[in-house]
Image 1: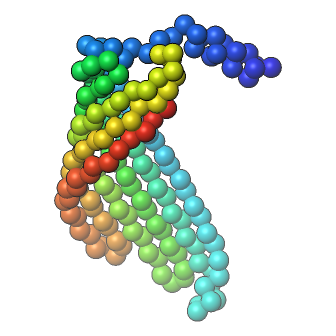
Image 2: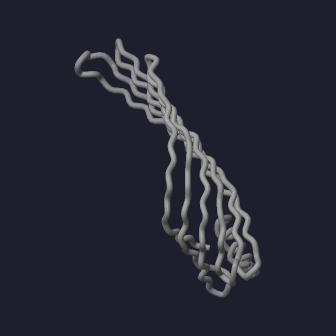
Image 3: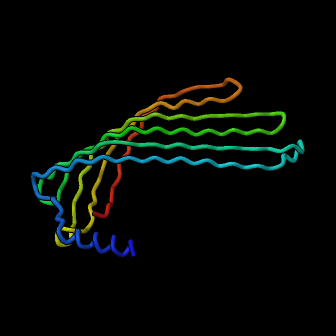
Length: 165
């Protein structure tokens, strides 16, 4: 019953909302993602007949603001900034050996986009258009027993977006 009431409230609210995609309007945004996973495996090492355990963990986070300006009705030109953190670990134990490795990435990005909005009754529809971006960062790798190294990287990307609005 609560789900039905929530759906009805959203439908009613949609009747009073209008997209503001006219020339001169501005669009401010903030996006964020956080993901974490842990996987554990236990089995028998056939070569040594001892138990073997493996635990893998992954953490990913991204946050960034965006700004767009409508240069004409339903045409938006904008840009976005981003920060990304990614860490993956793998811990493997099989008597008498223990292995651990870790990879960490910190990166920053900037992108520019152009979007065309196609709306039904100025309420619902989609937006689409090209984008181009640049990203730079640092990757660090650590391996036990005591091996580690790091590297810096840059990347460029271009593509197209399609979003429901």
